[in-house]
Length: 368
Image (cartoon, rainbow, N blue to C red; front, side, top):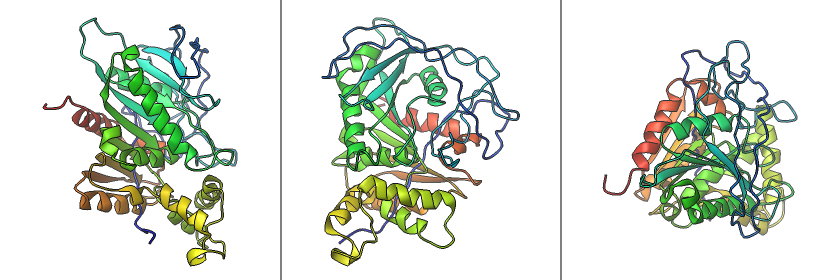
């Protein structure tokens, strides 16, 4: 029988200025100089080390924005925020880490950006944060304002990898989860390239990427894959999101998310055939795409964040958190005040320190 609990997650990123970004503010991220990209064999082995820079040391900021902080999310083609991040600044940004783009698979979308800082020959390997972008599973990119966020995290002692994945409707579920797992495997296999510790990896996702992050933390034995999950506004039960989008009072974002669920699972969940009014193969994909159906003992601890007025409601997190806790897994749900979704929660002054503190706590070497 299909579980109807819902899960949610949220994680977000960088806010270092005392100036607040107005809710809903958006801007286009500046285009950084193109980094040199090493050739990578189809197997994922880097061929040439190469060198590059993720961006220049300053960018532009809309009036009233937080210097260097990601804004509420890049607008999708229809103008709705999609859970991706844009960056803007009028300040000197953090010193640039090293930067490379790698292929973890043969498809054009199977690419990742790695950010790390040099360490001495005897330095302790550093923990890793894998970032998965948002965009209704249909759009979004590993770059944009995530570059700035990655640079901020490297200053805190992390190696950061931001990954793309194949998008719906061209790629249907579970292609997105498969790609996230493949990106994770690549990181662990090549950790030595960045002086990273393959045993200390956390995943942080935004919106649709938050859903994929919680999938990594719960699919199979999640703690064998990642040490922790932070998710911002994740629609962890796509069927619930589909139902919400069909309500007469649904917002434009909820209606768009309903359409995205149909594109993700390549079927219409309210068809009149099959089990309980839903075609059996469609039902199976929906169940598999719901993170709560995978919750079990041995999953990774999770920090799940939502805005109080989020169009992806906090119930998408509370259901998952309940299932995890029942299995003995640590799960924390936080609500950020405001009509905020995904990266927009970075406008809250408490979000960045919460994320850094949580990551450092859960990525400590064993025994500390």
